[in-house]
Amino acid sequence: MTFVRQWALRVSSFGLTWLYAIYRVHPAVWRLMARNYRPWMARFARLHAWMTCQFAAIDVPAYGDFLRRNGWQFRWFDLASYPPTDKQSYVNAYSQEQRCRHGRFEIAGSVVDESSGSSGRPYSWVRGRRELRTVHKNLAGYTTLVFPSKRRFVINAYSMGAWATGTNTGIAMARVAMVKNTGPDLDKIIDTLRQFGPGFDYIITAYPPFLKHLLDRMDAVGFDWAPFRLSALVGGEGMTEALRDYLEQRFVKVRSGYGASDLTIGMGGETDLTVWLRRRLRADERLRAALLGPGEQRLPMIFQYNPLETYLETTADNEILCTINTTAVLNPKVRYNIGDEGKLISYDELASLVHIGPGKADRMRLPLLFLYGRKDSTISYMGANIYPQDVENGLYRDNPLAHQIESFCLTLDEHTDLESRAVVHVQLRAGIPPTGAFADACRGGVVSYLAEVSRDFAESLAEDPSAADLRIRLHEHGTGPFAGGTGKIKNVYLARSAAA
Image 1 (cartoon, rainbow, N blue to C red):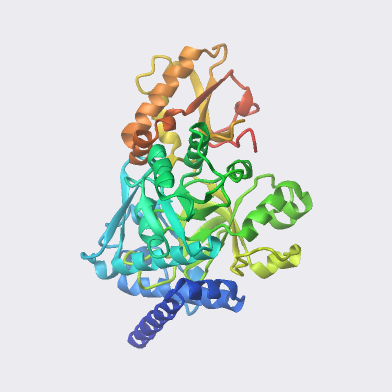
Image 2 (tube, rainbow, N blue to C red):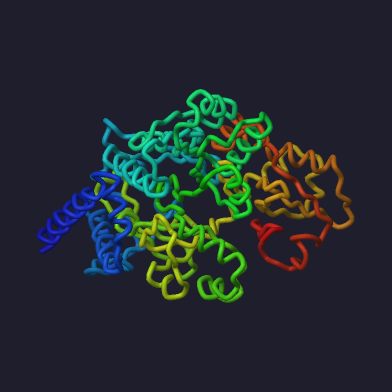
């Protein structure tokens, strides 16, 4: 019976992967599917996620061992019976090869992407040829839906170094556009625009803060925006609506994509609908309470996603679990918890709460992800994750004033110029006054340490020196974000920004 079950699952899973490949044949077919997604497909996607987990249990040595160690027992069609995986319990516990199908790499065509871990040790993520082809087709399909044009010119300003998104974005965009991979080089981007002229619909792909650097530089050099049509696709960190409003004074449209090195790029993307909804939530308290819950003041990023490709769930703590629904993945990701906090809602559920009028050009009927960000006390900045452990090392290592520090926490603050900067709030011991010399010593130590241990941060620093503008804000004991904190057993390392 086990043999029959295994082969039934194997044939079914391969069949579904082949079926999904049909709507990736051409971006027009991808757009047709996205606009005609129906609720019954969600139940089908969950069934496929269950099959993907069982398939991994059979073919992936690490996952089979992981299930045995967690006392797992087979149950038909019960996705929740498979324990969640994460970086600590699964990725760190098994070798790269053990986590691949059949315990071996596919050598030809595989690409190794990289991201930094909390200890500064780089994490590598192996992706096979078929998986990468799938990623590129999905990103290309999304791009044609959100940025319709017959003359696209993509200027890829993502880092070509440590962060995986840069290379994959360039390859994906080449399917539907002319592409120049400039990296985050302001002058090279401006020169490219001037050389090729206004006869294209340009899309700049970049980190959100870099896009503001670009706009400000173009204004400063007297760039003639009038004849050009520039849009932007950003990623790597969240973006406020105030920054979007600022950017869209010059750019026709600015949209964000959602992904993770652990999983894949292009897990979700902003659409006309999600941006309209997010802007409604800024001012409509009744709608905010209905969608996010009473008393919720945070404004999440909102994306639409395709459960047939990336099946998402939420835990009791509102953390996102993701299963990549395809046999094309060399290193299967099943019920993987990346630590992001969020909420899921179907298109029809949204339509029952708010009138979705005409004028949403992309009108995808895919479900929505409300994303608040990481729950692991990290902040994402210029493509790098900043972790409390690394900040602590930077504050205390070789700092003659370290004994005067009581505690610290992190925020990502948007300033009056709409520039988002990482801020380290330092609480001084009782009776210690804040001074500029103290702040300079802390800043130098933290930037130096981050540049040593985080390859992503070092790459950002080399390509954009303004990344070093990490703010240190000193607080007298028991003031600012530390007010009322006396008696807490654990430090809270991630505080809400002043804007929040």
